[in-house]
Amino acid sequence: MSELRYAEEVRQSPAFRSIESDIAREEFSHAYFILSEDKDAVETLFNLIAMRVYCDEACGHCAECHKILMRSKPDVKFLAEGKENFTVDEISAVVEDAGMTSFEGGRKLYFFKNFENLAEAPQNKLLKTLEEPFDKVHFLLSAPSVATVLPTVLSRVKQVTLSPFSEASVRRALVREGVSPERADRGARLAQGNLTRAWEFAADEDFSRHVEEAIDFLLALKSSADAYKYLKAGIFSKERIEGTIRMIELVMHSAMSAHLSLPIALSERAADIVKISELYSMSAIGEALEVLLTCRARLKSYCGATNVADYLMLKLVEVKYKCRS
Image (cartoon, rainbow, N blue to C red; front, side, top):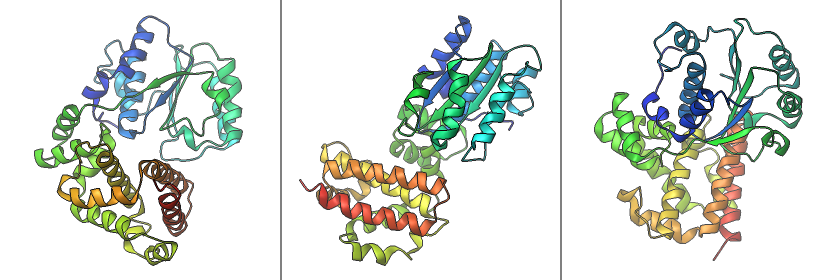
C-alpha cells in the first residue's frame, strides 16, 4: 500500500483529533474501538494513527510513514487484511507476539478491522490481554456495530465513533480521486456521509439500471411465492448480490425519508419511492435494514448467494406484513 485515500477528510474528523490528542498528551490508551460502517475511512484512520505515533505530523512522506504505508514496519501489525475470520489459534499467536519485546524499542500497534466477524472464543482469547495490557502495546479494533462484540471486550476499550462526513467534503474527496463532478454529486448526495458508499455509487456504470431493479423488486415482492421467482434472477447472482443489497438499502433509506416528509435522495424515482413507503411502514423499514445487515454478515461468513437471497426475500415479506401500521 502506498497511497492514502481521503486523508484530508479523516484528519479533520473528531475521531482522529481525539486519538491524536491522546497521543500528544501521552495518554494513548492501550485499546480503542472504532465504530464505523465506512471501511475506506477506517482504513485511512488506522494508517494516520499509526503514522502519528511515530511521526509528529503524520506527514505521509518521511521514512517512518513510508514504512507504515508499505506495511514494512515490524512493530505495526495490520490484522485481518484480506481475511474475514480469525481463529482462536491465530488470536493466540497475536497475543503471544504482543508479549514480546518490540523490534525497535518503542510502541507496538495492532490494528484489527472487521472485528464483528470474530467469534466469541477468539474474542475471549484477546480479552485477557485487554484486561492486563502489556506496556506500550496498543490494540485498535473496528466494526460497523457493537452487536456481535462481547460486552466484556467493550468494557476494556475506549470507544470512538467515526462520524459521517459532510456531503460537501465527500463531494470534494471524490473529485480529488478523479471522479467526474456529476458522478461525485450523485455519490455524495446518496451516501449519507459514507466515503466507501459514495465511491461505489459514483463508480457504478449502471447505477440507474441497478436502482430500477431494486425498486421493481421491492414493489413486486408481495408473498413467499414471489420470493422464489427471484431466486434465479441475475440480481442475486454470486457476482451481484452485494451490490443488490446495497441498492435495496439505498431504496429503503429513501422510503424512510418519504415517511418523514424529508427530501428523497432518489428524486428521479420519487413516485415509486412513495409507493414503497406505503408498502413498508417505518418499523418494517427498520427491521428490513437489520435483515440486510444480517445478509451482509452471512455473505462474509461464506454463506452461498442463493441461501442469502432466499433468507433476504422471505424475511422482507415477513417484516412487511408483521409491521403493518
